Image (cartoon, rainbow over all chains, first blue to last red; front, side, top):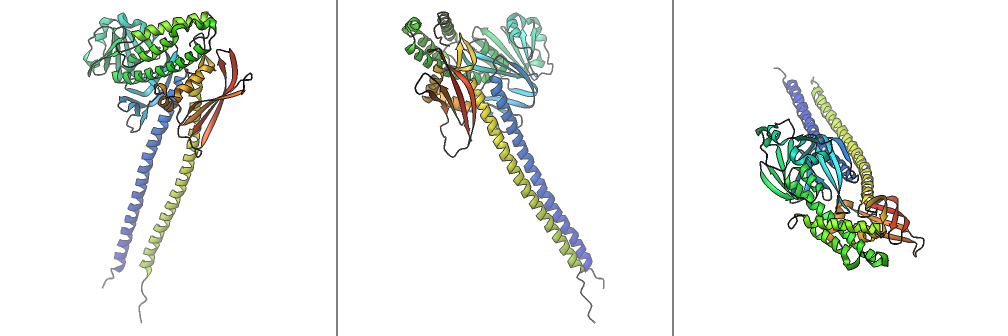
Amino acid sequence: MKNHKAQIEVSFHWIFILIAGAAILAFFLIITKHEKESADINIEGAVGERLEALFSTIQQMPDSINNETLRPELEFRCEADGHTYTLKGGERRFNLYSQVIFSPETVGDGRIITWTKIYSTPFPAAQILYLSDEKTQYIFVKEDAENLYKILPELYEKKLVPAEEVQMQTDQGFRKYVIITKNDVVLDSSMTKKTTIVKITSEGEINFKNLEGTATRKYSNQETLFGAIITGNPELYDCAMEKLMLVSRITSEINLERTEHLEDDTDDRCYRFYAHGIPVEYLQSIIGNSTYPPASDYAPLNQVVTSLSILNRDMARANCPTIY
Amino acid sequence: MKKPKNKKAQVQSGETIIVIIIVTIMIIIGLVIASKTKTRNATEESTALNEIDTMKIALIASSLNELKCSEYSAMVKTCMDYHRILSFRDTVLEDKQSSKNYYYSLLGDSEIKIKMIMPDQEPSVQVVTLYKYDNISANKSSSSVFIPLIVFNTMEKENYFSVLEVRKYS
């Protein structure tokens, strides 16, 4: 009789090795998957921290223009929980609680451009960061917006075209187009999906027009007009303007307190500038009119800003402590 | 005569099992060592990030337009205005215009003080706390940055040597 005992034991030997090997392989695959997810979260966090530091430090350099390479794409949103951005494909949302940033919906995957300006009322109230990239093109209609074209820094992708040539513009592969004009424009069909028209309807008012519809917004001065141009998006414009007006009110409140101290301590020679509480009244008016959206428009704010700057100039000429 | 039992296959099976057990133990030891190294690196990275955060807050605090001196409407970079410092303190303390939330988002879990040397006054050193995070407890660790600057009193036309202290809690 043949002995089959050894053959069964050899087969069992191999089955046992296969099962043990499969278990070890599965264990390592699980560990690798877990480590990859963990690394992705770490990268998201590290990029977010770096961007936050970048935004904070750039904003401290007023009137500066910079460009940097940013590989990941950032998606900006304005929702109920505030002004946020995420890395494309990521889940973590970074909240822009205090930074006044005007940007299009998507920025990144290439060269990004930053421009910092001071918003004044008439004292420096806030620092504005205009953030865009090489994939967003700004098209200025020559007859309507040549002066704005000249002010926008050269680093931005910008173009100046005569009114009759706007409808001949075709898609050149940019991610987004923003057309700045004072009149209605007709677009080539290749452009309509990616284009927002920012129409300056009157002094202090703009219309954002795209496939989703038309939205009317108010702007207070050239800095906020550039904010509307750079974003090309009414919701993102709203988020940034609300923060800008909040910061402006806080800075004005600090200047108001300071003015009240100066009024109490000033000498007889300079007291005439504080007579009837005029500087205090101006500052209170600035606080009251620095709202978004405004009650009607920003004309009252601009008027009182002009009055305060004239008063401050007169105080400086008289060698008296100035309001700002 | 009895035939001796063949135990060769049993020994070979036992050998395989022992090898697998030893390999598993080695893998577990390797994972424990890797995990401990990762934890230590994460702690060091966290400390470095805290220090960067402190520097960032110090840069923001020393650059606030609300505090800077102005000479005929032009901001002077390395100087803070005495009356603006007091007004800033009062505005944030009284939470005017929701300033507390705004400055918390800007300055986070930190405490910012200015120590001014005023030789002609009593006391000669005045300390003003510009901003203080609400939930400071003795158990929290902190790191500090000191920035020297000038504080200008526009009424007295005097400059005071001062130090801006920024303490970040974690």
